[in-house]
Length: 349
Image 1: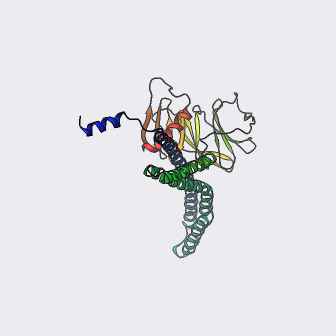
Image 2: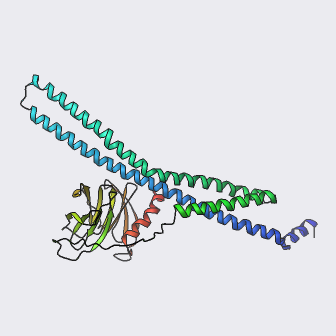
Image 3: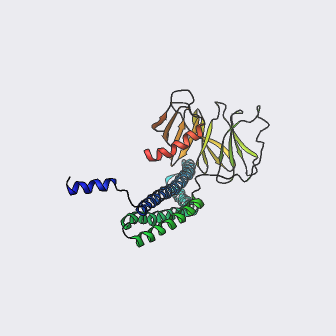
């Protein structure tokens, strides 16, 4: 047997010294802990960025509604001017036209200075704490990642390896404290509860609440399936307005913008909230029944009971995300079915 082959055989059967095995085990354990923490930091960063995008989309939609309202005011004013000048001779029309231009200029300037500015300031205020958390996630991830990469290169240098490992453990602990404070894995604590009766004198049946939407101003929308109504509650949970939906059961609702809500009643009916009053808006006629609905980053996700669909807010079908035809209703609850799949969809599309 050659000396080289003998050396190779000895290396195969000779176990590592206890100290070396201990170091290897410790390194593996530290590596696993580091990778887990890095993964959680990335999830936290993505979560904050998704919340920022969602806020931006909501305010963009709200801004669009305000612009539409302004456009209606301008068109209405122009028609008024046309009507008033229809029998006016040419020499007397110059003054109304100048007046019209000044009025439109005033409307646009007022809109730009007040409404849009206020909306942007409000959006910036709401996004600011999310940006702080997101930036902290990026910083902690960067620092921990570089320690994670450096440690394997220092295994042959005991002193440097010990320093790097200690620093890594400190950074893991710091990151875990940060995650606990800012990314609690969506665990909620119930501080209390209260019961409110939302039955109206015109209701013929006991209320059957199938969906609830909290509005940014503190008001609440509830869907009463048994009485075919969407009811608006004030901050004291008293009914202040309602809409009738006699065409079908109300299955679900979701918030689109601070003043617009999508209602699933087989089709999708949009409703707007303005000055404590509800009004029906546009409607989406789907090729399938609608039993659940959710809004995520400008897109609508609707559930038919055994399939999940993704739509643009305009009503254009993007795709069918998932389907299980083993039964008529294959999801235990539609809301969870939609919201859980929503997270997956952001990575697929």
